[in-house]
Image 1: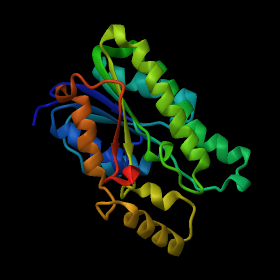
Image 2: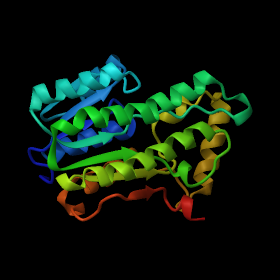
Image 3: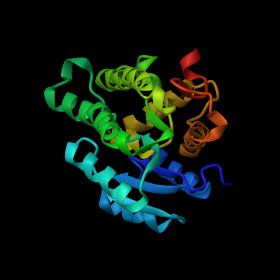
Length: 249
């Protein structure tokens, strides 16, 4: 239970879903955790159900100034950073013929600009031998109608992670990406779909997965723990797919 003893982890999008499950697991494994999200109410609720050494920071990764704030508050509280998990993301649905500037900007500001700027702010404070993790998605490998801009944003994030892997190699920092398939998280309730359509979409996704179900946030959290810990000390620059086999068929 001490795989991350005294390690400092910064997690974005950590007030629910994958980020919150990861924060909880990291705390159980001895880490000091900075839990970031853009909804204060959700952060407060998350804090009530967590135990360990952590702080919460209200920050929206799509806002450049908030990334500065996040890293400043993290380092003020805990000094340096060992693990940077850039998990925050949004996935609104829009067929290509209905994509507009606002849709594009919202997705790319959160899913691409945010993680890139957060990385830039964090690097001077990231310990040599540390770890950077990104949450991507299998949508950058497998096409799903209506997710064109989202898919493009996750493809861009994966490309950025490859370059970052090379740029930080002299410092022994490992950079890896987690690509979840359909995971039972609150993000599906934010797709902008009617309830009945959402239910049918969920059934459709689950039916496509060889394991026949959605994944759980805790399963992605365990993947993040593996990649952040010394168990993955020689794993670097990869995109680890966690999708129940969906992308393989």
